[in-house]
Image 1 (tube, rainbow, N blue to C red):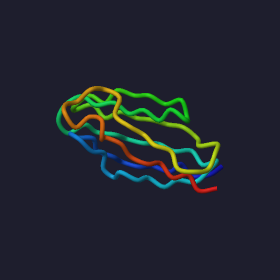
Image 2 (image 1 turned 90 degrees about the horizontal axis):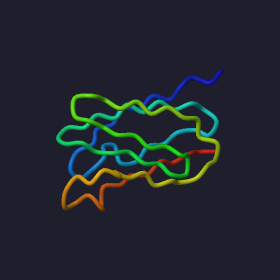
Image 3 (image 1 turned 120 degrees about the vertical axis):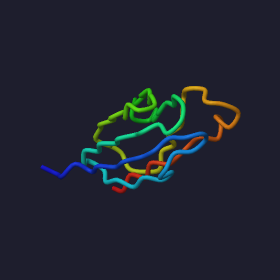
Length: 94
């Protein structure tokens, strides 16, 4: 069995860090996302993923990417004036 790819991220107005995550197709991924200020969201529509990230309560997102390419993830909880630009990229290597 492939080793799970574990990534820790932070979410704060108005950015995810790291903003680009590179993983491998077919290998399970575990994202631990911590909000540093207010509530944020994590939406990765191509993989049917949506999570709320509440301050002080890391969100755990687990999935196995089944397609390669670059996919945009975004905050889908309105977090202020810069909310629309709060995005990142998941790069899945085939």
